[in-house]
Length: 586
Image (tube, rainbow, N blue to C red; front, side):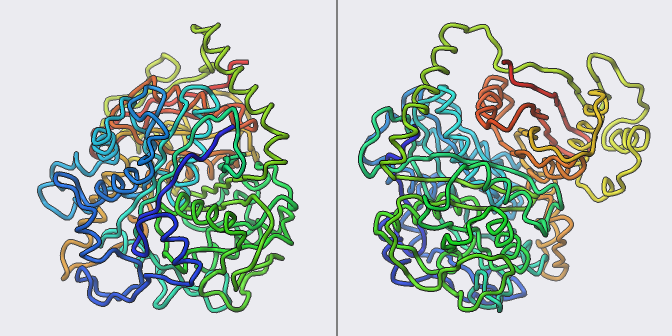
């Protein structure tokens, strides 16, 4: 079983989990209106750290983002419940944009190594002395829950015993202007699920949960029971009208209505997200479970949201309470769900955390401290971990999966299943040549940034070589990709659009591609894949670490095959894709 050993939240309303929970229970928030901040032309509402708070957590030689993450991790591991210097302990960092604010400095714009999330993760890991290599989960708004799911899987597959999972993001002109370009920000305090909702607020925070394999569960100890990641296969920036991905993520958990104190929804207060979530919860049959959302207290804290909101939810159940949805007054969604507008008591001991995000990704997590339920599953969970350990010991040469097809795309050409494809162009022009010669029926290709084009073309050629019927709904195939540079090229394009106040013109069609997981979403949409889509960032290409993640991904019993690989772009004419189809080695 996977146990929660400790946790922490650092936000504008508190420096510990309990300080944050007490503030939330009292209805407090740091959301404020900002006029003219960072010289942005439009005002916005957000929950931001004060200058004094920022000074208190800053560390010499570290960025604002790194310092915030370090401050939260430091508090979470203060009791020394795990050995962070052990090769059995891993750091997993959840973030959407990390150090992206460095791009506003010309020194970093032209030499952006410090902006790369893998570099930031290494900086954080080195501060504490982690000996294992960190993994960055960059899966848009679901990153926090996706990071907890990854940690659970890595421990269950017996590759690690402990995981320190930290989610963090700081707000910047880069991020705020991007959401403004989508017209997604509210001009007032956000109102999740309310009939008068008109957009989201942004926030900054860091939150950390320490997880461990625990064979002897203790009374009142929290456990991650199950987690699922699913795609809508609908649109890269618009939620499914039927809540398809969120619904499937909920079903993957196996949680019964009678088990749950509440469902803590994403609840961004945008028109379509809240409607989609209500439909998904309704379809999943949770009509009588109270639904709440926490964005009215914190705003959308992005990479921190899934972890922060899981911690507040654990604190609430510990207090036998369901927290009200701040800003909600009158139901404004069509799903048959029960929304919380006041704090209420509960005697239940588990909950679901739900998130959704750009790229069509959705994630759900079932967290419980119900002793009667945990006793029923403990034997099965511990047997699973013991079996994985035994397999690893007795069959060291046995590959965890089988590779069926492979493709490599470089600026000079393509190797598909060991054969060189005939091409004439090089660099970015090669991708267009490949599209025209082998695909041709998906004009959305021309809207994609170069890295998404690269991943899309590589996946198309790979899947064609597989020779199977395509474009039918499929939930048992995942799309899991890795890289080093995140979405660097699109990041630079967006930054250039906001550098000059006299030529300030952020574009939603550029901003959406500043999330690297959009590649996985495009592949899922094209092929109607409703399975998992995930994107991970490493400091550098690491075949062993990639193998660990892929092996752990088969812990999702629905996943029978994965479109996997490395898709990385240094520039529009310098790129590298190595993709393959893997199946679990039974």
